[in-house]
Amino acid sequence: MAKNVRLDHSGLGEILKSAEMHKLVQDATEKLAENVREQGITVGAMEGSGEIPLPVEAQMTTTDRAHGSVVLAHPAGIAVQAKHGALTKAASQEGLEVKGS
Image (cartoon, rainbow, N blue to C red; front, side, top):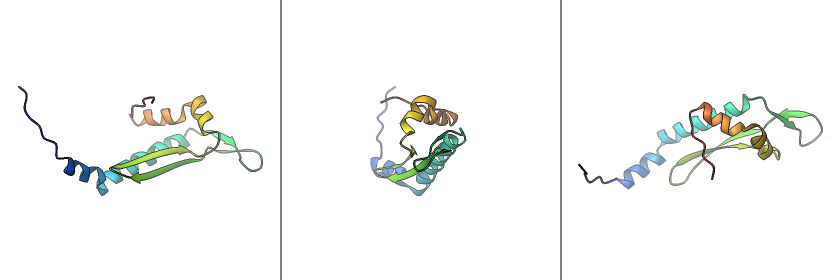
């Protein structure tokens, strides 16, 4: 039994940009960043010598919706992801599905 469904695009847009949605996305983004930090990965210090904890940044932006990103903020970040899968592991801990692009 097919029924016609009309989406209220304006209403959906309001929800996606709402303070409540922003807070939900921000909390999830910060939790993901914390999951990466808890892995205890170290990288070479950019100035000087020795090892430092992998710098991880959680960033929020809003365009047509609230969205967050977690950044491995070090030149070795790509290598860390390739070797350890730090972001992938952190996401799966939260039940998020990671797809390649």
